[in-house]
Image 1 (tube, rainbow, N blue to C red):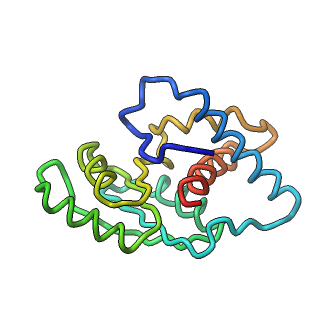
Image 2 (cartoon, rainbow, N blue to C red; image 1 turned 120 degrees about the horizontal axis):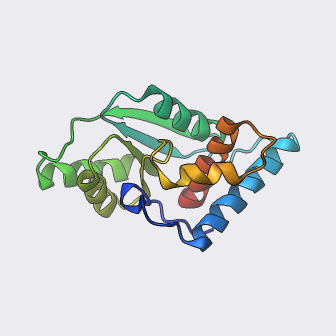
Length: 167
């Protein structure tokens, strides 16, 4: 799989590339199969993932943390006040620090400009709300096995994105 982790708000309103859709769905199906076989997957064991959030979206935060932790990752929640009013230097400094501390970062509720700068400077995969309902990958969950609960399908898509980006 070769997934672009920066896929985010800027992609809303555009169709996802067929190769990206196929890769995410294949990864999610593989994770589902492993779980059904009773084999716990530790694909993210030893990975440290930062969750940078500035708003109060407990469902999105919990969804992301559960998806990552289920595969063995350690998720650190980091509260931030970064905004469009933040200086470029402040965002760059934060991004570089995040890049030294984490294997990947999920940003929730941050302005697109801030996420874009973090992505450019962190040197690690940076996601823009992959656990949030507005993320383009949310629609992919409906294409997974309908016998799975909707929340389980959503979690598998998030996990597929994380596994590929941090492999």
